[in-house]
Length: 428
View (cartoon, helix red, strand yellow):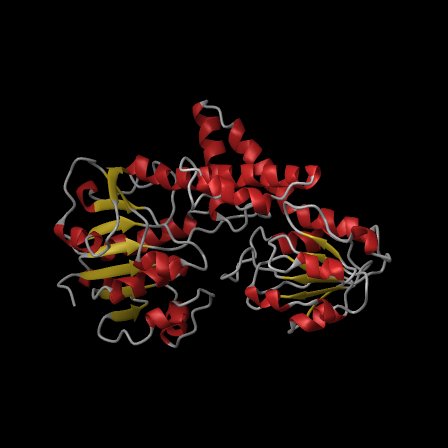
Protein backbone atom coordinates (compact mmCIF):
# COMPACT_ATOMS: atom_id res chain seq x y z
CA UNK A 1 0.00 0.00 0.00
CA UNK A 2 1.28 3.49 -0.85
CA UNK A 3 1.77 6.17 1.80
CA UNK A 4 -1.01 8.35 0.38
CA UNK A 5 -4.74 8.16 1.03
CA UNK A 6 -7.13 9.12 -1.75
CA UNK A 7 -10.71 10.30 -1.46
CA UNK A 8 -13.32 9.58 -4.11
CA UNK A 9 -16.44 11.74 -3.76
CA UNK A 10 -19.52 10.74 -5.74
CA UNK A 11 -20.13 7.02 -6.21
CA UNK A 12 -21.86 6.98 -9.56
CA UNK A 13 -20.32 5.15 -12.55
CA UNK A 14 -17.13 7.23 -12.69
CA UNK A 15 -16.60 7.23 -8.93
CA UNK A 16 -17.07 3.49 -8.48
CA UNK A 17 -14.64 2.71 -11.30
CA UNK A 18 -12.05 5.16 -9.98
CA UNK A 19 -12.35 3.93 -6.39
CA UNK A 20 -11.73 0.34 -7.47
CA UNK A 21 -8.89 1.33 -9.80
CA UNK A 22 -7.07 3.35 -7.13
CA UNK A 23 -7.41 0.49 -4.65
CA UNK A 24 -6.06 -1.91 -7.27
CA UNK A 25 -3.04 0.41 -7.53
CA UNK A 26 -2.53 -0.10 -3.77
CA UNK A 27 -3.73 3.32 -2.60
CA UNK A 28 -5.92 3.47 0.47
CA UNK A 29 -9.25 4.89 -0.68
CA UNK A 30 -12.02 6.64 1.23
CA UNK A 31 -15.05 6.33 -1.05
CA UNK A 32 -17.76 8.84 -0.14
CA UNK A 33 -21.29 9.46 -1.31
CA UNK A 34 -23.86 11.61 0.52
CA UNK A 35 -26.58 9.01 -0.12
CA UNK A 36 -26.26 6.59 2.78
CA UNK A 37 -28.65 4.06 1.25
CA UNK A 38 -26.56 3.98 -1.91
CA UNK A 39 -23.37 3.48 0.11
CA UNK A 40 -24.97 0.55 1.96
CA UNK A 41 -26.09 -0.96 -1.33
CA UNK A 42 -22.60 -0.66 -2.82
CA UNK A 43 -21.05 -2.24 0.27
CA UNK A 44 -23.48 -5.15 -0.20
CA UNK A 45 -22.45 -5.51 -3.85
CA UNK A 46 -25.55 -3.87 -5.34
CA UNK A 47 -23.94 -1.34 -7.66
CA UNK A 48 -27.07 -0.18 -9.45
CA UNK A 49 -25.40 -0.16 -12.87
CA UNK A 50 -24.03 -2.54 -15.47
CA UNK A 51 -20.31 -2.29 -16.18
CA UNK A 52 -18.39 -5.44 -17.13
CA UNK A 53 -15.70 -6.29 -14.57
CA UNK A 54 -16.66 -3.62 -12.04
CA UNK A 55 -18.05 -5.96 -9.38
CA UNK A 56 -14.84 -8.00 -9.48
CA UNK A 57 -12.73 -4.85 -9.34
CA UNK A 58 -14.43 -3.76 -6.13
CA UNK A 59 -14.43 -7.18 -4.47
CA UNK A 60 -11.86 -8.21 -1.85
CA UNK A 61 -10.42 -4.74 -1.30
CA UNK A 62 -10.60 -4.89 2.50
CA UNK A 63 -8.00 -2.68 4.15
CA UNK A 64 -7.72 -0.53 1.03
CA UNK A 65 -11.27 0.59 0.28
CA UNK A 66 -13.52 2.19 2.90
CA UNK A 67 -17.11 3.19 2.04
CA UNK A 68 -18.75 6.08 3.86
CA UNK A 69 -21.63 8.54 3.76
CA UNK A 70 -19.87 10.82 6.28
CA UNK A 71 -17.99 13.66 4.53
CA UNK A 72 -15.80 14.12 7.61
CA UNK A 73 -14.02 10.89 6.66
CA UNK A 74 -12.55 12.70 3.66
CA UNK A 75 -10.30 14.66 6.05
CA UNK A 76 -8.00 11.60 5.97
CA UNK A 77 -7.32 12.01 2.25
CA UNK A 78 -4.27 13.66 0.73
CA UNK A 79 -6.00 13.96 -2.65
CA UNK A 80 -9.78 13.98 -3.18
CA UNK A 81 -11.26 13.26 -6.61
CA UNK A 82 -14.72 14.68 -7.28
CA UNK A 83 -16.29 12.03 -9.49
CA UNK A 84 -20.07 12.34 -9.65
CA UNK A 85 -21.58 11.73 -13.08
CA UNK A 86 -23.15 14.72 -14.81
CA UNK A 87 -26.70 13.96 -16.01
CA UNK A 88 -27.42 14.71 -19.65
CA UNK A 89 -30.87 15.55 -20.97
CA UNK A 90 -32.28 14.15 -24.22
CA UNK A 91 -31.39 17.49 -25.84
CA UNK A 92 -27.74 17.19 -24.80
CA UNK A 93 -27.73 19.73 -21.95
CA UNK A 94 -25.67 19.10 -18.80
CA UNK A 95 -27.09 19.44 -15.31
CA UNK A 96 -24.23 20.61 -13.08
CA UNK A 97 -26.34 20.96 -9.94
CA UNK A 98 -25.12 17.64 -8.48
CA UNK A 99 -21.48 18.70 -8.96
CA UNK A 100 -22.09 22.05 -7.26
CA UNK A 101 -23.98 20.45 -4.37
CA UNK A 102 -21.26 17.86 -3.86
CA UNK A 103 -18.59 20.57 -3.85
CA UNK A 104 -20.49 22.38 -1.10
CA UNK A 105 -20.39 19.20 0.97
CA UNK A 106 -16.84 18.08 0.21
CA UNK A 107 -14.76 21.26 0.33
CA UNK A 108 -15.44 22.12 4.01
CA UNK A 109 -14.52 18.55 5.00
CA UNK A 110 -11.03 18.58 3.45
CA UNK A 111 -7.85 18.99 5.45
CA UNK A 112 -5.91 22.23 5.11
CA UNK A 113 -3.33 20.59 2.83
CA UNK A 114 -5.58 18.31 0.77
CA UNK A 115 -5.61 18.54 -3.01
CA UNK A 116 -8.91 18.59 -4.92
CA UNK A 117 -9.15 17.07 -8.40
CA UNK A 118 -12.33 17.62 -10.44
CA UNK A 119 -13.05 14.65 -12.70
CA UNK A 120 -16.74 15.26 -13.36
CA UNK A 121 -17.09 16.62 -16.88
CA UNK A 122 -17.61 20.37 -16.68
CA UNK A 123 -17.47 23.17 -19.27
CA UNK A 124 -14.50 25.51 -19.71
CA UNK A 125 -14.32 28.05 -16.89
CA UNK A 126 -16.02 25.89 -14.26
CA UNK A 127 -12.89 24.73 -12.41
CA UNK A 128 -11.34 28.19 -12.22
CA UNK A 129 -14.60 29.47 -10.76
CA UNK A 130 -14.46 27.10 -7.76
CA UNK A 131 -13.75 28.87 -4.46
CA UNK A 132 -10.70 26.81 -3.51
CA UNK A 133 -6.96 27.50 -3.31
CA UNK A 134 -5.84 27.27 -6.91
CA UNK A 135 -2.43 25.77 -6.09
CA UNK A 136 -4.34 22.78 -4.64
CA UNK A 137 -7.05 22.57 -7.31
CA UNK A 138 -6.80 20.50 -10.49
CA UNK A 139 -9.00 19.24 -13.29
CA UNK A 140 -8.36 15.77 -14.73
CA UNK A 141 -10.12 14.60 -17.87
CA UNK A 142 -11.93 11.27 -17.49
CA UNK A 143 -11.54 9.03 -20.54
CA UNK A 144 -13.87 6.19 -19.58
CA UNK A 145 -16.16 4.50 -22.08
CA UNK A 146 -19.30 2.64 -21.00
CA UNK A 147 -18.70 -1.08 -21.36
CA UNK A 148 -14.90 -0.61 -21.32
CA UNK A 149 -14.53 1.57 -18.24
CA UNK A 150 -12.63 -0.90 -16.06
CA UNK A 151 -9.93 -1.64 -18.64
CA UNK A 152 -9.58 2.02 -19.67
CA UNK A 153 -9.29 3.16 -16.05
CA UNK A 154 -6.53 0.63 -15.39
CA UNK A 155 -4.69 1.54 -18.61
CA UNK A 156 -5.84 5.00 -19.70
CA UNK A 157 -4.79 6.07 -23.20
CA UNK A 158 -3.69 9.45 -21.88
CA UNK A 159 -3.73 11.63 -18.75
CA UNK A 160 -4.85 15.23 -19.24
CA UNK A 161 -4.37 17.51 -16.23
CA UNK A 162 -5.58 21.08 -15.89
CA UNK A 163 -3.75 23.46 -13.55
CA UNK A 164 -4.03 27.11 -12.57
CA UNK A 165 -0.41 27.55 -13.69
CA UNK A 166 0.30 25.25 -16.67
CA UNK A 167 4.06 25.50 -16.00
CA UNK A 168 3.86 24.71 -12.28
CA UNK A 169 4.81 21.39 -10.71
CA UNK A 170 2.26 18.81 -9.62
CA UNK A 171 2.35 18.33 -5.81
CA UNK A 172 3.92 15.02 -4.63
CA UNK A 173 0.71 13.33 -3.53
CA UNK A 174 -0.99 13.92 -6.88
CA UNK A 175 2.24 13.07 -8.71
CA UNK A 176 2.21 9.68 -6.97
CA UNK A 177 -1.27 9.02 -8.37
CA UNK A 178 -0.44 10.10 -11.90
CA UNK A 179 2.82 8.14 -11.91
CA UNK A 180 0.92 4.95 -11.09
CA UNK A 181 -0.36 4.92 -14.68
CA UNK A 182 2.00 4.24 -17.56
CA UNK A 183 0.69 6.46 -20.35
CA UNK A 184 1.37 9.85 -21.95
CA UNK A 185 0.54 12.88 -19.83
CA UNK A 186 -0.38 16.39 -20.88
CA UNK A 187 -0.47 19.29 -18.41
CA UNK A 188 -2.18 22.55 -19.34
CA UNK A 189 -4.44 25.32 -18.05
CA UNK A 190 -7.86 24.56 -16.61
CA UNK A 191 -9.77 25.78 -19.64
CA UNK A 192 -7.58 23.87 -22.08
CA UNK A 193 -8.07 20.62 -20.19
CA UNK A 194 -11.83 21.17 -19.94
CA UNK A 195 -12.02 21.88 -23.67
CA UNK A 196 -9.69 18.96 -24.51
CA UNK A 197 -12.30 16.42 -23.42
CA UNK A 198 -14.96 18.18 -25.48
CA UNK A 199 -12.57 18.36 -28.44
CA UNK A 200 -11.91 14.60 -28.36
CA UNK A 201 -15.62 13.84 -28.47
CA UNK A 202 -16.26 16.43 -31.19
CA UNK A 203 -13.63 14.94 -33.49
CA UNK A 204 -14.97 11.43 -32.83
CA UNK A 205 -18.46 12.68 -33.69
CA UNK A 206 -17.19 14.25 -36.91
CA UNK A 207 -15.55 10.97 -37.95
CA UNK A 208 -18.70 9.01 -37.15
CA UNK A 209 -20.82 11.53 -39.06
CA UNK A 210 -18.65 11.20 -42.16
CA UNK A 211 -18.72 7.40 -41.90
CA UNK A 212 -22.51 7.42 -41.65
CA UNK A 213 -22.80 9.80 -44.60
CA UNK A 214 -20.65 7.55 -46.78
CA UNK A 215 -22.38 4.38 -45.55
CA UNK A 216 -25.69 5.94 -46.58
CA UNK A 217 -24.22 6.69 -49.99
CA UNK A 218 -22.87 3.14 -50.22
CA UNK A 219 -26.38 1.75 -49.87
CA UNK A 220 -27.65 4.05 -52.61
CA UNK A 221 -24.97 3.22 -55.20
CA UNK A 222 -24.60 -0.50 -54.51
CA UNK A 223 -21.26 -0.27 -52.68
CA UNK A 224 -20.47 -1.86 -49.30
CA UNK A 225 -19.15 0.26 -46.47
CA UNK A 226 -17.94 -2.96 -44.85
CA UNK A 227 -15.47 -3.31 -47.73
CA UNK A 228 -14.45 0.36 -47.71
CA UNK A 229 -13.88 0.70 -43.94
CA UNK A 230 -10.59 -1.32 -43.91
CA UNK A 231 -9.23 0.86 -46.70
CA UNK A 232 -9.58 3.95 -44.52
CA UNK A 233 -8.00 2.22 -41.54
CA UNK A 234 -4.98 1.29 -43.68
CA UNK A 235 -4.29 4.95 -44.51
CA UNK A 236 -1.76 6.21 -41.91
CA UNK A 237 -3.38 9.66 -41.97
CA UNK A 238 -6.59 8.06 -40.65
CA UNK A 239 -5.34 5.00 -38.77
CA UNK A 240 -6.38 1.52 -37.61
CA UNK A 241 -8.36 2.80 -34.61
CA UNK A 242 -10.22 5.54 -36.46
CA UNK A 243 -13.91 6.13 -35.75
CA UNK A 244 -15.01 5.08 -39.22
CA UNK A 245 -17.39 2.26 -38.38
CA UNK A 246 -20.86 3.33 -39.46
CA UNK A 247 -23.47 3.32 -36.72
CA UNK A 248 -26.91 4.48 -35.68
CA UNK A 249 -26.00 8.00 -34.69
CA UNK A 250 -24.52 9.27 -31.46
CA UNK A 251 -25.98 7.31 -28.56
CA UNK A 252 -25.57 7.85 -24.84
CA UNK A 253 -25.06 11.35 -23.55
CA UNK A 254 -21.40 12.37 -23.45
CA UNK A 255 -20.63 13.12 -27.10
CA UNK A 256 -24.02 14.70 -27.72
CA UNK A 257 -23.56 16.85 -24.63
CA UNK A 258 -20.21 18.08 -25.88
CA UNK A 259 -21.64 19.03 -29.27
CA UNK A 260 -24.36 21.00 -27.47
CA UNK A 261 -21.71 22.68 -25.32
CA UNK A 262 -19.70 23.69 -28.37
CA UNK A 263 -22.74 25.20 -30.06
CA UNK A 264 -23.62 27.21 -26.96
CA UNK A 265 -20.04 28.41 -26.44
CA UNK A 266 -19.76 29.35 -30.12
CA UNK A 267 -23.01 31.28 -29.97
CA UNK A 268 -21.86 33.17 -26.87
CA UNK A 269 -18.43 33.94 -28.29
CA UNK A 270 -19.47 34.72 -31.85
CA UNK A 271 -17.54 31.85 -33.45
CA UNK A 272 -18.81 29.55 -36.22
CA UNK A 273 -20.11 26.10 -35.18
CA UNK A 274 -22.28 25.26 -38.19
CA UNK A 275 -20.23 22.13 -38.82
CA UNK A 276 -21.20 20.91 -35.34
CA UNK A 277 -24.87 21.52 -36.05
CA UNK A 278 -24.48 19.49 -39.25
CA UNK A 279 -22.91 16.61 -37.30
CA UNK A 280 -25.87 16.60 -34.90
CA UNK A 281 -28.34 16.58 -37.81
CA UNK A 282 -26.43 13.73 -39.43
CA UNK A 283 -26.63 11.79 -36.17
CA UNK A 284 -30.39 12.22 -36.02
CA UNK A 285 -30.75 10.88 -39.55
CA UNK A 286 -28.48 7.92 -38.77
CA UNK A 287 -30.52 7.05 -35.67
CA UNK A 288 -33.65 6.82 -37.80
CA UNK A 289 -32.07 4.27 -40.19
CA UNK A 290 -33.88 1.49 -38.31
CA UNK A 291 -37.27 3.09 -38.86
CA UNK A 292 -36.60 3.62 -42.55
CA UNK A 293 -35.76 -0.07 -42.95
CA UNK A 294 -38.76 -1.18 -40.89
CA UNK A 295 -41.00 1.01 -43.02
CA UNK A 296 -39.54 -0.54 -46.20
CA UNK A 297 -40.17 -4.02 -44.80
CA UNK A 298 -43.76 -3.14 -43.90
CA UNK A 299 -44.36 -2.19 -47.53
CA UNK A 300 -43.64 -5.84 -48.37
CA UNK A 301 -45.33 -7.56 -45.44
CA UNK A 302 -48.86 -7.64 -43.97
CA UNK A 303 -49.86 -4.44 -42.17
CA UNK A 304 -50.25 -6.29 -38.89
CA UNK A 305 -46.82 -7.95 -39.06
CA UNK A 306 -45.28 -8.31 -35.62
CA UNK A 307 -41.97 -6.60 -34.86
CA UNK A 308 -39.21 -7.90 -32.58
CA UNK A 309 -36.81 -5.24 -31.31
CA UNK A 310 -33.65 -6.85 -29.96
CA UNK A 311 -31.68 -4.39 -27.89
CA UNK A 312 -32.72 -1.31 -25.94
CA UNK A 313 -29.32 -0.15 -24.61
CA UNK A 314 -27.58 2.44 -26.76
CA UNK A 315 -24.61 0.06 -27.14
CA UNK A 316 -23.41 -3.30 -25.78
CA UNK A 317 -21.83 -3.37 -22.35
CA UNK A 318 -24.17 -0.82 -20.78
CA UNK A 319 -27.72 -0.64 -19.50
CA UNK A 320 -28.15 3.00 -20.52
CA UNK A 321 -30.93 3.74 -23.02
CA UNK A 322 -30.23 7.46 -23.43
CA UNK A 323 -30.54 8.32 -27.14
CA UNK A 324 -30.74 4.61 -27.93
CA UNK A 325 -31.80 3.68 -31.50
CA UNK A 326 -34.11 0.93 -30.24
CA UNK A 327 -35.99 3.33 -27.98
CA UNK A 328 -36.25 5.82 -30.84
CA UNK A 329 -37.69 3.09 -33.07
CA UNK A 330 -40.36 2.22 -30.49
CA UNK A 331 -41.35 5.88 -30.33
CA UNK A 332 -41.68 6.10 -34.13
CA UNK A 333 -43.59 2.91 -34.89
CA UNK A 334 -47.35 3.37 -34.55
CA UNK A 335 -48.41 1.92 -31.18
CA UNK A 336 -51.05 -0.78 -31.41
CA UNK A 337 -50.93 -1.19 -35.18
CA UNK A 338 -48.09 -3.69 -34.99
CA UNK A 339 -47.58 -6.01 -32.02
CA UNK A 340 -44.06 -5.30 -30.74
CA UNK A 341 -41.94 -7.60 -28.57
CA UNK A 342 -38.68 -6.29 -27.11
CA UNK A 343 -35.68 -7.95 -25.48
CA UNK A 344 -32.46 -6.70 -23.90
CA UNK A 345 -30.15 -8.62 -21.54
CA UNK A 346 -29.40 -5.59 -19.34
CA UNK A 347 -31.31 -2.40 -20.06
CA UNK A 348 -34.35 -1.29 -18.09
CA UNK A 349 -37.43 -0.39 -20.06
CA UNK A 350 -40.34 1.94 -19.41
CA UNK A 351 -43.41 0.30 -20.94
CA UNK A 352 -45.27 1.68 -23.93
CA UNK A 353 -48.75 0.82 -25.24
CA UNK A 354 -48.61 -2.14 -27.60
CA UNK A 355 -45.06 -3.06 -26.56
CA UNK A 356 -44.30 -6.19 -24.53
CA UNK A 357 -40.94 -7.08 -23.01
CA UNK A 358 -39.96 -10.76 -23.06
CA UNK A 359 -37.20 -12.55 -21.18
CA UNK A 360 -35.83 -14.60 -24.08
CA UNK A 361 -34.71 -13.53 -27.54
CA UNK A 362 -36.32 -16.61 -29.11
CA UNK A 363 -39.73 -15.67 -27.75
CA UNK A 364 -39.62 -12.29 -29.48
CA UNK A 365 -38.29 -13.69 -32.76
CA UNK A 366 -40.73 -16.61 -32.99
CA UNK A 367 -43.75 -14.28 -32.90
CA UNK A 368 -42.50 -11.63 -35.34
CA UNK A 369 -42.09 -11.29 -39.10
CA UNK A 370 -39.77 -8.30 -38.69
CA UNK A 371 -36.69 -8.72 -36.49
CA UNK A 372 -34.61 -5.64 -35.68
CA UNK A 373 -31.23 -5.88 -33.97
CA UNK A 374 -31.03 -2.45 -32.37
CA UNK A 375 -28.05 -3.18 -30.08
CA UNK A 376 -25.09 -5.32 -31.13
CA UNK A 377 -25.19 -7.66 -28.13
CA UNK A 378 -23.31 -10.85 -29.02
CA UNK A 379 -26.28 -12.84 -27.69
CA UNK A 380 -28.06 -11.94 -30.92
CA UNK A 381 -25.38 -13.53 -33.11
CA UNK A 382 -27.10 -16.82 -32.24
CA UNK A 383 -30.10 -15.89 -34.43
CA UNK A 384 -30.54 -18.34 -37.35
CA UNK A 385 -33.21 -18.59 -40.08
CA UNK A 386 -34.90 -21.58 -38.42
CA UNK A 387 -35.91 -19.38 -35.47
CA UNK A 388 -38.10 -17.20 -37.70
CA UNK A 389 -41.82 -18.07 -37.75
CA UNK A 390 -42.21 -18.44 -41.53
CA UNK A 391 -40.66 -17.80 -44.91
CA UNK A 392 -40.37 -14.23 -46.12
CA UNK A 393 -39.50 -12.43 -42.90
CA UNK A 394 -37.38 -9.28 -42.64
CA UNK A 395 -34.15 -9.20 -40.64
CA UNK A 396 -32.70 -5.73 -40.02
CA UNK A 397 -29.13 -6.07 -38.77
CA UNK A 398 -27.34 -2.70 -38.96
CA UNK A 399 -24.14 -3.96 -37.33
CA UNK A 400 -23.71 -7.06 -39.48
CA UNK A 401 -23.49 -9.54 -36.64
CA UNK A 402 -25.38 -12.12 -38.76
CA UNK A 403 -24.60 -13.76 -42.09
CA UNK A 404 -26.92 -11.86 -44.40
CA UNK A 405 -26.42 -14.23 -47.32
CA UNK A 406 -27.75 -17.12 -45.24
CA UNK A 407 -30.97 -15.28 -44.43
CA UNK A 408 -31.41 -14.12 -48.03
CA UNK A 409 -30.84 -17.68 -49.26
CA UNK A 410 -33.71 -18.78 -47.02
CA UNK A 411 -36.01 -16.27 -48.70
CA UNK A 412 -35.82 -13.50 -46.11
CA UNK A 413 -35.26 -9.77 -46.60
CA UNK A 414 -31.95 -8.76 -44.97
CA UNK A 415 -30.67 -5.21 -44.42
CA UNK A 416 -27.28 -4.15 -43.11
CA UNK A 417 -26.07 -0.59 -42.55
CA UNK A 418 -23.91 0.56 -45.46
CA UNK A 419 -24.85 -2.26 -47.85
CA UNK A 420 -27.59 -2.92 -50.38
CA UNK A 421 -30.51 -5.01 -49.09
CA UNK A 422 -30.56 -8.73 -49.84
CA UNK A 423 -33.52 -10.88 -50.76
CA UNK A 424 -36.00 -8.03 -51.13
CA UNK A 425 -37.74 -9.58 -54.12
CA UNK A 426 -38.17 -12.91 -52.34
CA UNK A 427 -40.28 -11.42 -49.55
CA UNK A 428 -43.98 -12.13 -49.99
